[in-house]
Length: 191
Image 1: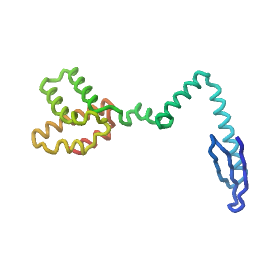
Image 2 (image 1 turned 30 degrees about the vertical axis):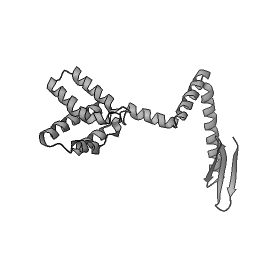
Image 3 (image 1 turned 90 degrees about the vertical axis):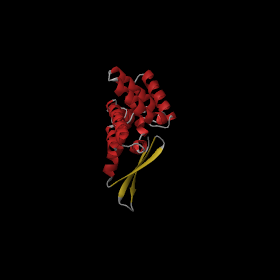
Image 4 (image 1 turned 135 degrees about the vertical axis):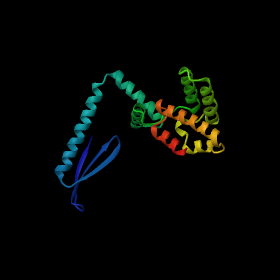
């Protein structure tokens, strides 16, 4: 890697120029000493990175490169993938799961819980009517407006029955990490 440190007379400053992975970088500093210190820091970082890379076994390097290529083929960066993993691991984001699959899991769990037949049938009917036309959507795509539009034609007892069933379903989604808490609270604000 080649470094050039130049005095910029018009600005009374010093510029450090170098190329990193084919990209030209230009940094300005008030003194030549600051520019030289940055050059040394960059050189040490590049050296440490190269040393770390060579310290990996050939199989590990091949595995990393293969995974990186697969990630790049999807149009994402390694940083995107890592950030998404961290968010999912800590339950801070949405899981890419279809509403139909989530509904099936919800009903299966309610059946295992051995709730009353009447309550189970209410969930199947009330939540099922909401889910059926939206089964192919991701849970994360469901908005407060979707719920409000669905409940709009119903009144009194029917409205309350459907609202309670949907609230139970979306609360279950939060607990099962299908959606984040923000989605659930927005749902409740609509009702």
